[in-house]
Length: 177
Length: 437
Image 1 (cartoon, each protein chain N blue to C red):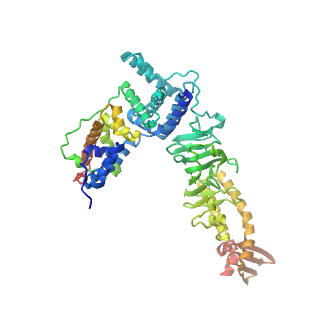
Image 2: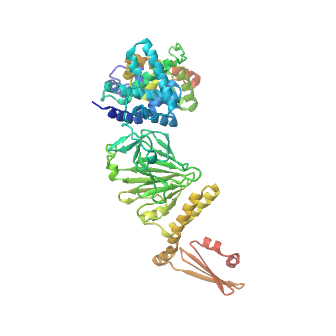
Image 3: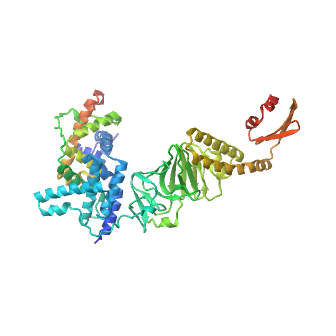
């Protein structure tokens, strides 16, 4: 069984390796550097506490993201932060084939950011777990207490909304055929 | 023409998940197999991949903060090391505040079980063994602006409480950015191995690189830091920057940093002046410093110096080929140019002016010896002519590599010498130049 010092050494190594994406994820979830700082510390304190339950054959980065995710959810809840959530519009068939080719330009990127901010919090969480934590739909499903197909369908539907909104704001030339 | 797909078209949400790299294992392989033979799905997938890049950038951008990240890492390492470590009071207070709030809520709602879930592990007398403590006197005078690092300690790469002097350091998975006291900025790419030392040349701060990519960018004034890798050392002039690419071949240092103790030189080094001007400071071969310009490159391999691009100066100095006299002329011109530009930058460049003066002193010795060597070896025929008028006598002689003038007036003779005819003419007094016209 690993000693406390061994665990601390390994966690310190993991902190050096993964603190950047973890910090980014926490900042994105909580909104400020100082809160992300707190969440990062708490993530590793919990990792220390529950080291015995960590399966070394698993990816430590994903395990840490799971902890960070829970920490952020609890922190946001305890601080009574509210997120404005837009309802999805009824798309029909129009938006499903919209193309985002022109989004490479900076103004489109800003537009996409604004649209992502309007997404339901759960969708944003899923996308953030994907990009910061590089988690798969199965791993995200476990954290979000969803089935894996539900994660994929949810993400797909949210992106269809995004495609439609950005496509309509970009003018008719950006609409897919 | 492609064969029709043998498998049914995947669900749209599976294509999205594939494009967003959310699927692994056999299902991913199946989907890719289908895409290989289905143009329609492939086109959709491609558009989703393009979209994914935009969505990723939209989410990741601005979420990172170099200085805050570095500070957060330091506090996290302290938190891991144990409650006895001296974390900054403000941050620990905030941490305890909300942990306590969560604990109280948990106790009220769920019971004692969750209390222990959220409570930081008490570690009476905990030894912060995970983090290598770096005592104040061992710390390098550098501020970490971004990224993270490990230090080699007892055969392992381990986190440290601060950046140490005279100790090999490996940059973390992101660019490690350091600010140095002289205003210079150092950037070390992922896994680059380096150390901060006092340079034995003159006691200035220096960086030694062993492996990976690194850059040193000088500030606008008074930078005195050097960067060295193997035979190559670089002093960057104000506003300039140099990029180093080093390979420590055949060394499994990532697995065993102990090998660093017995090997401290990279096997391959490429140094390139990225911007501005840089002085190349060779080491260990009794070679002299060489001023370099933007874009110039030097390379060393285990077999010796390699290349140098179109730079006659460097090729001559290190490969023993090229025009030696031309190289010396160029070096003198470059040193003069550097000094002129330092003068233009103002009064705060005294460090560099002293540095260049010393270099000029070195090169003057070489300069004096040069013409004799060249003249004897190359044995160029010498041309001579003499002009007399108005009580003046001007005698000119020249080879293809050197020009002399002897001016006699009222029985008194003055001699002039230069490596180009143009430079010689500049030295002559106006009355002598009139004779030539």
